[in-house]
Length: 80
Image (cartoon, rainbow, N blue to C red):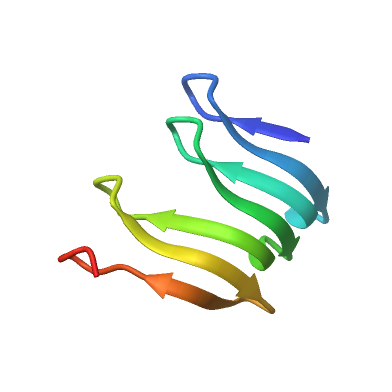
């Protein structure tokens, strides 16, 4: 299944079960960049690689999700 935003930009493609993202999927930001590629469990990023950005588009996390926990680099305001 694929989800699009108001401007017809792809936001998610993957599996759903009981109305939640479940199983393998890819999540994209509004610019089309992939921000998560992995498994979801009841709508939560569960296992896989991901990146998170703040509201200004700055990278704030890059790494793996293992059983919903983030494992990787977290970036703060000063870029470290």
